[in-house]
Length: 332
Ligand code: ATP
Ligand code: MG
Image 1 (spheres, rainbow, N blue to C red):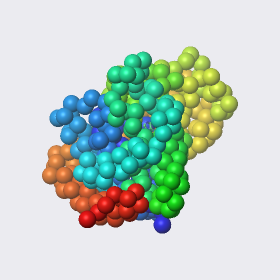
Image 2 (image 1 turned 90 degrees about the vertical axis):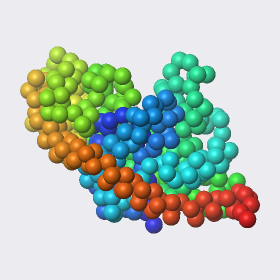
Image 3 (image 1 turned 180 degrees about the horizontal axis):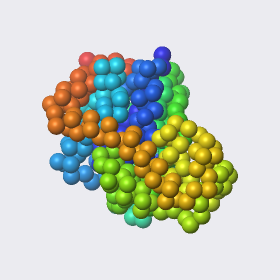
Image 4 (image 1 turned 45 degrees about the vertical axis):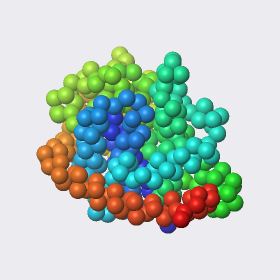
C-alpha cells in the first residue's frame, strides 16, 4: 500500500516555497495515494513560539491546505499534538538514533546558529520526531522540498536500525518525493538562502496571504543582477537570483525553465518581473480568498482538525501497539 505523510510547521504564514515545494504536490498526489497531512505544532516549539500565535498559525496552515485544494474528506488533515503517539514513538526513536547521525544535520546547524549550547534539546532531536511522524503511519512516501532530503535519509536510517535491532520488519523504508521545477525556492533578498517562514525579513518571501499590491512590491524589490535574462538555462549559472525567479515562473506556469527562457530570453528584469507578478497574483488570489473565508469560520477548521485527529489516531494506535510489543513494553 502507498501512503503519504507530510507536514508543515505553524511557525508563521505559508509562503511560495511551501506551496511550490510541498503543498501543490500534495494536491496532485492525493488522488493516487492514501494521504495524511499534518500541521506539526510540536516541531514548531523547538524554537520559541508565542502561544497565541501558535494556535492562530495552526488554524491558518490548516486553512491554507484546504484552500490550496487538499480535500479534507479524502485526506486526513490534523495537528500533531492531538495524537500522542508522535511523542511516544519519538522517544523510542531518540533511543534508536545515534548522536553522531544528528550531529550531521545541516538544518540544526543553520537554525541553532553560533551558540549551539543555547539551542533547545528539541531542536537537536527534531529529525527523530519527524521520523516518528512518518513512521507512526508507516508512511511509504513523503513529498517535501529539497531542504528536507537529509532528514528523510535519517528517517530511513532509523527505520532500518529499528528493524535490524529488533529483528522484525516493522517499518517501511520511506521514499522522498521531491517534485517540480521549484523544489528549493530561494529568498527574494538573497539567492543563497532558502525562502523561509522564519526569515525576519517579510520581503524575503511571498506569503500565501499577501494581496496583489504586496506581491507586486515584493517582486519589484526582489534582488536581481543588471544583465537581461539569458535564453538558455546554462546562462543562469552563477546568477542565483535570476535562476530563482525563472524557477518560480516555470513552477507557477507548469513549464520547464527552458521553455520559459525560450520565450523570455533577452527581456530586462522589469518586464519579466511584471509577468511574474501577474502569474503569482493569478495563482495565489483565489487561494487567498478561500483562506480568508475559512478563517472567518474557525469552527469549520476546528471540526476538520478534530475529525482528522480521530482518523489519524485510528491508524496510529495499532502501529504504536506493535512498536511497544516489539520493544518489550508491557501492555497490561
Ligand atoms: P521554518 O523557517 O519555520 O522552518 P519553512 O518555511 O522551512 O519554515 P517548514 O514548515 O519547515 O517551512 O516546511 C514545510 C514544507 O515546505 C517542507 O516540505 C519543506 O521542505 C518545504 N519548504 C520549505 N521551504 C521551502 C523552499 N524555500 N522551497 C521549497 N520547499 C520548501
Ligand atoms: Mg523549515
